[in-house]
View 1 (tube, rainbow, N blue to C red):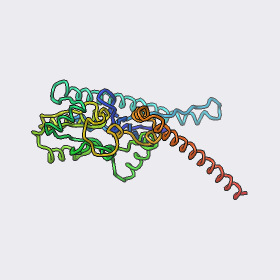
View 2 (view 1 turned 180 degrees about the horizontal axis):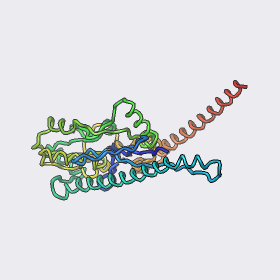
View 3 (view 1 turned 60 degrees about the vertical axis):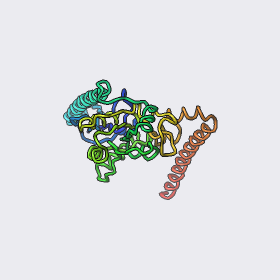
View 4 (view 1 turned 30 degrees about the vertical axis):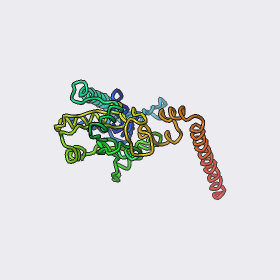
Length: 322
């Protein structure tokens, strides 16, 4: 049987110490965006380590053969296909292991920028003081889905990854696969690398600027810092922990939501099954929890009504055929 390849997009990541998976967001987590194809694919990271947008992972369903005499010929005819499927599975597993190794190496390289002093680490509170008192610039590299919810006042928004808006058949298939394999729950859309990232940064921000770079979880901003450093930016600062680590009042914001709510979405956000919403429920008490519980009951009721309607429709068609 044909192997099923699962591409895991690294647009959304969960933080400096987490695996780089896809936008996202995080990843948060996103923080992963997964797409399925019917062929084995392999997308390597680029030399700068930032274009590592996909992993590939294969699994195949093995078919059992029968020992009964009547099935001997069938079993013999199917043997080459089974061998081919096993070979493909082995190759895809090797491919996945190699790409995971490459991504881990890229993460270490990005994090080493802070240890080597190429990029200085700032907490959210320190970043807020630097923007207010020292006229530091803030570069927001998050995708539009996160930036549209809340952002730092007077910040510059240039996403390093953004939502893939292509409508070609291949991309539509990936979007459908992404939705069915977790996107409906996490709210993370299919992402792609923004080829205009560095040209837009150079056009808008002088290389002498004191530049704070931030994303939702903290890893995409490190990837952006690597590109910026190579382009000649030397006064780079990294928002440690990303916007998920920002507390109320740390940064002046535009938008109604807290910064750490920008990385959640989908059904998990609607039902309140995220860490940030649990923390918020603990603060606000029973009113907030009652709202989330009412949403859960509404979803259960909607599912019940759907299945009841499907049963009634099935009975109706049966009567028509009789």
